[in-house]
Image (tube, rainbow, N blue to C red):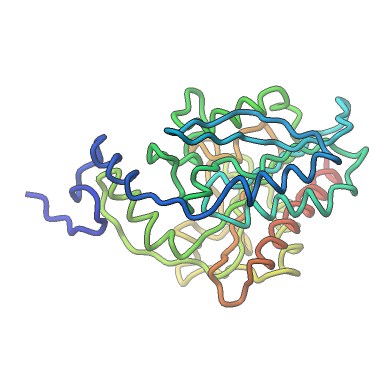
Amino acid sequence: MNNTPAFYPIGTPGTPWSGAERAEWLSRQTRHRSYESEVLSKVELLRSRFDVEEYGRLKYGDENFPLLAIRSRDWDEDLPVILVTGGVHGYETSGVHGALQFVNQHTADYVDRANLLVAPCVSPWAYERIHRWNPDAIDPNRSFYDGSPAEESAALMHLVAPVVDRVVMHIDLHETTDTDETEFRPALAARDGKSFTPGGIPDGFYLVDDSENPQPDFQQAVIAAVEKVTHIAPADDKGEIIGSPVVARGVIEYPLKTLGLCASVANARYKTTTEVYPDSPRATPEQCNAAQAAAVIAAIDYSLAHP
């Protein structure tokens, strides 16, 4: 007899979901906002200054989502490539709008210095549902590997493939939210038939470095820049952030490639994943977007200064 207490409204505790549970989960998802009006319209305004390409198209039922990437207009094969991604988790709003803010306001500084490739909203279906997963209850940010089951991840890998060895820096823009604890972590445990152990949400900005190729000075340069915009998350009483040891102020490490994370999609020397905390009483949405943009600028500046 399974004595695991129920902690999520779908499925049987201790039993991984089948197709029926995934279908029930999908039936509960509601569209809350518009990818077309909030994201595509902003990208369209950039066409006069950048090359915009459709690198894929997601078709889910009767819904259709073009995937757009923004490129430097005067692409120079002799220059290094900088990759910026946002919205891999669609609910993490500042990742999307921070990337667009960077493109709109700050790219002039890098003309003739680097090629910029920006995919501001990798998961548009999830953006509209304010969710972490795609319609198949798959996390795109655990799906960056050959034969990926997530169309969002496969499309981005295809986009990056021609320049995979020329990318010198990749920054992937994320958020950690209160709903990670109230919805997404319980859903993940339920989907996989595991128990759920409540945790905490760090109050502030932090970064995830690559434990397989750590770049501590690079990470600290980003932390220093972001701290001028918003506060940095402290370690908890175990010296951890979301269960991982803090290796330097505001920095934890994951094995990016092993976990199939987006920040491993290119063979860049410099990689980082940002984590903004939009639910903090000490941060506004505008601050969160600005923090993401500041992180991008600092990451590019450091990588170009330390080839």
